[in-house]
Amino acid sequence: MSSGRDERRTARLTRRIIAFTDAHEGPVEGQIAYLGQSGARIVMVAEDGTWGDLVARSKEIAEEAVERAGITVRESFDGPMADRVRTGPYEWSRMAGIQLGG
Image (tube, rainbow, N blue to C red):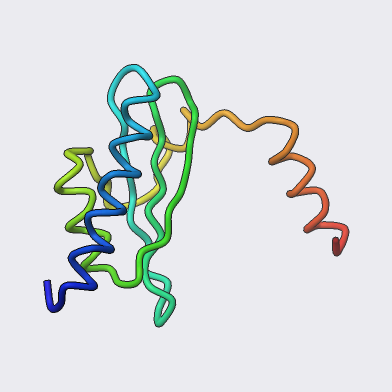
């Protein structure tokens, strides 16, 4: 880590990832997507289909946080991982709103 600030960010992300894994039974898998200057997005999917995401300031911070949290990281958000995702009414309404310009 390059600074104390990056270390604190990594520790905070690690705690949030662990909190997600502790709230769900079974293994949690993740995928890190580089967002450019915005950083990196960590998408997590639990065995029960619950998913969540976090944004890190850099890909390096994201990679360090998932390693510390001990989750399996996939190279891509592929079929088996995507098949487990369960969406609810909120997600469907957001998707519809985007399609309708909302």
